[in-house]
Image (cartoon, rainbow, N blue to C red):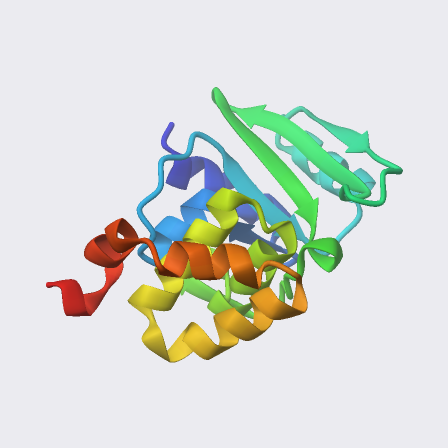
Length: 174
C-alpha cells in the first residue's frame, strides 16, 4: 500500500472531521520531502477516532501527555505496514472545515498548514514553510507573520536565506 492509499483510507474513516497534514500534505503543495508515515489532524476526540478505526479493523492506540510542550494526545497506528498518527486539530492550528482537495484527498488548507508548521517549529517544519514561501510568493507575508506569532521567525529566515532552498523552489532560480 502506498502513502496516498493509506491516507485515503484513513480520511474516509474520519470524514468529515479529518484532514491530511504532515509530509504527504506538504508534498501535495509542492514541497519535496521524504516521509514514511501519514499524519492526519482530526476534530474529534481520540476515543472516537479509535472507535471509528476499529470498525474497519485498523488497530490504534492513544498516547496521552501532560507535558505542556506536547500535544495532549496522539492516536498512533499502522495500516498495511504504514505508520500513521492522528493529532488533535485544535492543538495543531488546523481547521478541519477549511480544506482543499488535492489528488482526491482532503488536505489542510495551505494557511492552516503553515500555522501548524509554525506551531511545531522544528527544523523540518520551518524548511517546509520556507519552501512554501518560495513556491507561493504571495504567501510570504503570511508565513512571516505566522512564524513571528509563534516565535520561530529566526528559523524561517535562516531557511529563506539558504541558497540551496532558493535553487530548488524559487521560480526565479529557473
